[in-house]
Image (cartoon, rainbow, N blue to C red; front, side, top):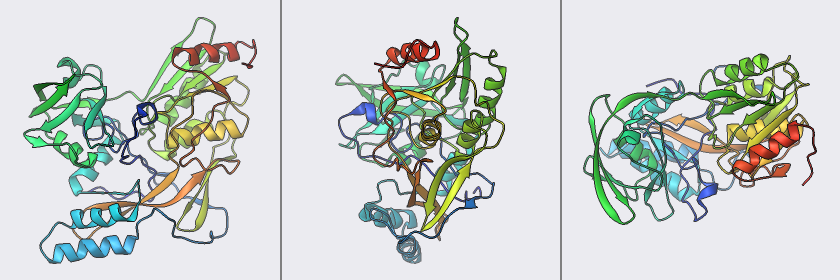
Length: 394
């Protein structure tokens, strides 16, 4: 299996409430095994800087004990049982809402996602509070799109295996597979059942897209922070017309590699703090690289689907007075997960701390309130008004 990253900041399975706009891609694997979700890790192979003294307590409420999880897995393996299942039971009882356990194949699939490539059918999925697996989004020009699947469809089974009530990581494993192999999906739409047989494909997402508006504004849309996306943001800023404003569109961005998020933030900052975080009592910091464009007018667009690493970027730009934020409150995923390899080769990712903005705000649970509130297409219009210099007031 791939080497474990030093630290993960990753969306996890939510037992979702009724407000779907706050969930967007936040459910565990919102597309992970369907071919769209992106895991996160902090700083990739880069060293982390220690910036403070240990915090009062390394254990927090709502976190699973790493030793207890490993011990449960080891005992289960010794008895010829599933180490993953035993570990997941301990995690579930702990109240760690972001903690989860993956087998080797699932974790390897997440590593593949880091490059923005995967094998799947092109669905983003999430689990509702009642256990129903629901399609949140369909990737354009994917097997799912060509078959006419759409957001709101309920996924009932994959290759004959019922998925209702399963952890989304298990649904992910069912939807993965070899390119060219069939995936038989049992679905429900508006109360009617249907069956679709799709062929799994090698898929790829473009994490950063750029477009120019007639008034000289450059819109940089970052769909996720996969490998190389941070440098693409920097390239897009350098290529923008001199003096022209930039919209950094982070709406619906579920996160990604934190190293890439820091690189993206560095495109607009000249060094300095991006975020701090703690890991079992040790406080650390993430810093922007020097030399970013600090003069160009900047608006960051956010919504309820902006989460985790994307919130890290938003918080840094907002706290340091670099950008006006426009949209709606972000998701509020600011907890840190660290992976632990278990005796049977499965991987448990357990919450070990939280991260904070440069001003010391914890994002976990609360998210970021934008400077200016706007919904839907109105957010971009309001951003254009801000960048046009015609005022930022209500």
